[in-house]
Image (cartoon, rainbow, N blue to C red; front, side):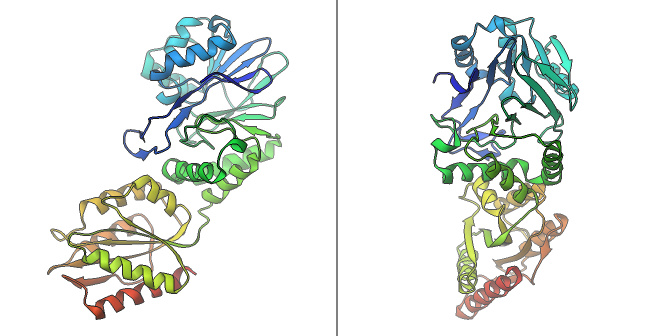
Length: 395
Ligand code: FEO
């Protein structure tokens, strides 16, 4: 793919990673691939904003060369040290060794840990500016959105915000803008990104959005470091972030279960019937065969979570245990939960699951439901009623 001029003399020079299927190790499924976005601004001075994953260095350099000889780059802004945005930096620095790097102190420290980069740094703080000629760049520190080093860059003359990971999506496309792709796919990926990466950071995100709103800076375009650029309606993604950060939910239930011989699964499906009878939207996932990142995306907007597991060695099954451990780290709030499952003789899974839910600070809305070996018709009626009772807690 070629460089794309996103505004007069501002170019996307990033990389599209069509084949990426997992991210952050294997914690995040990227079924639609991803992009690593980098932007080049040509003014009296030339500035490169962020870089790409190392595997794409050659592509990246070719794109830059199609716009400007790399040795002409005067400044490089590094909004975030994570390797998906910096691995190509050492190669770029070999082509423009005199370029000054603008980043936070934490970012400088991180760049040294990753690359031993002995480069010319300008450490920035919120409010600092860099004059390019006709344009200026202003910097806004954004620690913990989503690493301690993170910052946003803003260009007032273009009303352009470059917030790195914030407002991004893992979404590989030949298009670059929100008005060129399916809105449904775009928001789906944005929601998945928020749920799996930013969910625990809601308080920080709300404060940062509030701080930027108080600065009274107009934003006509948001160009993040992954996926699509927001130009049609940047407020759409800002408002979505505010809603997710506030843990705003709808009357929807996500049921996550794991089963040994199918009894817990039969229970789960009857609980679904009880919820549906009450008009509640439901999503059901067998955690052993489902995509965890997709489950988390669904949970982001659901008021109710129900967890089921057969008992094994007086404990829950390992798939549900791993899932709950991941969910606990996301620190969901304002949710109600319930637990169910079958067992052979002693039981134990429900108690263990409830222990994790309490540790996570989640409300357990009703007594757990258990049964021995396999459900009979009376048990299935109890499951149906369990679903109905839970529905009444989330309406
Ligand atoms: Fe896309 Fe935090 O790196």
